[in-house]
Image 1 (cartoon, one colour):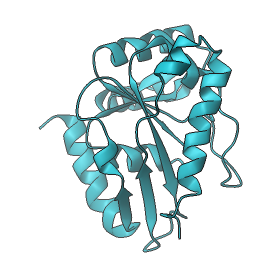
Image 2 (cartoon, one colour):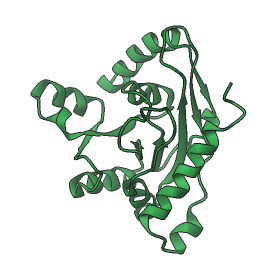
Image 3 (tube, helix red, strand yellow):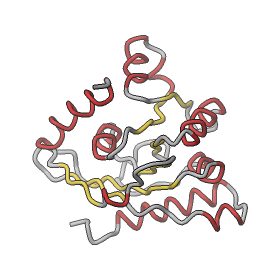
Image 4 (cartoon, helix red, strand yellow):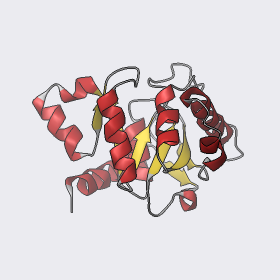
Length: 195
């Protein structure tokens, strides 16, 4: 078993009973090929929660500061994370993300770039749209819902891949592409699955 698989099993063993994590829409997740997984961001616990809920290993963008310390850098590399400088205009991170998508991997993003203080979905940064437009990856919206309080239900909802062929053909801007993705995440947050 890889370290990622081991870490995922440990997180699942703790989070599933503690936060009563319920995963909805797993059948929508593509079984192969590049996937851009875009989620809202309400807590520092979102990456492990989304990572353990996804059926395939996820390569998350993580803030560059986590790679400055040798110990945390080793951990980040072991769990498939790669660094991004604040603002998501980091060219090296964009190149890395595109390479992973072209290799048929899953890249996880929180397009808001930072946690939402209110829990409401914020404005997405252009990085998500850039990846969506520059790759042939399937774009899967995701919503994390719940308080992250012990024994209170936490939900992870995967939506159907977003139809992006027309958007790519129309050569829209990265900002507009991100708005399309954010609208799909909002639909999940407003869905019937939310109590």
